[in-house]
Length: 354
Image 1 (tube, rainbow, N blue to C red):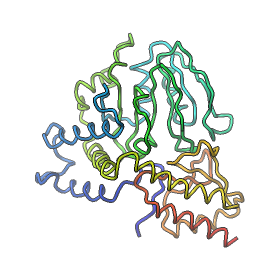
Image 2: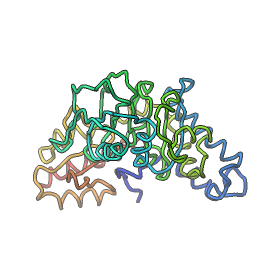
Image 3: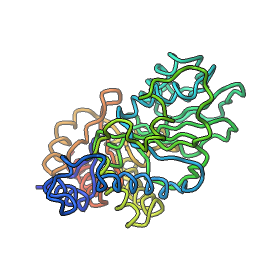
């Protein structure tokens, strides 16, 4: 039985992508070679990289606006330090909304002074801070758009004349935004774009070259731009599957249609969380994530029954992170509405049973 996959990552991907990607493992482009064994310098793969980069910029509305798209390695965790390595000369401002922004702050402190402009740690990161001031004397401002563990998402980004950096690992390509507000966007592929192994970095070129330190080649965005994401051997298969997923997003109507479907899924699940007396949402309502819905039982004695219901229904990955407990439903782009309905039906069945 095919599972309803609510895992936070690696993520669910479209069935069309799985089929095409699996065929490429056996024979890529009728070349007689597998995608796993072709040279990353071959014309076949260079065209994959070119298309993946082009699609990323197109879907974000950043083509011909001075941005470059890179496919690098090391995940968002590498970007925590790479962003600071390239941009932090003296001081940077960070918004702390959870585990991943906390980790980014830790790494950035190796390179300069960090001002934490606001934090939601006081309530176990169940909300997004508002009305904070961003200092004028900073090199950049950093935020995390969506928090997978705690289920919060920034709905409105601050207006600042400073360089803006955003970790969009868990909601990239899920909604329409004015992406030109951001100077650097990074996202691990495995949350909403492709398999683990590659990281998308979208960067405005004119923010580079302003720090005085010497940057090691592997850490230098300018080097990766000059080598078109091939300074070292890229994660060929991960880039290929990401390209297929970006094609799929475009074929479905782009970010406008993705946002519409994601909002429909989120509304279906959150409506049941709010209606059903056996459940309570974790995140503040105004900051709820459309990607990762976190919720708890109002009575933990029902856990064994509920867990059996959703597991028997073919649901996978619904357990919450240890930092929050309870449940977390990750509803990435490729998750069908029908899968969310299965979870809702299980919630209603629990109500009937107890």
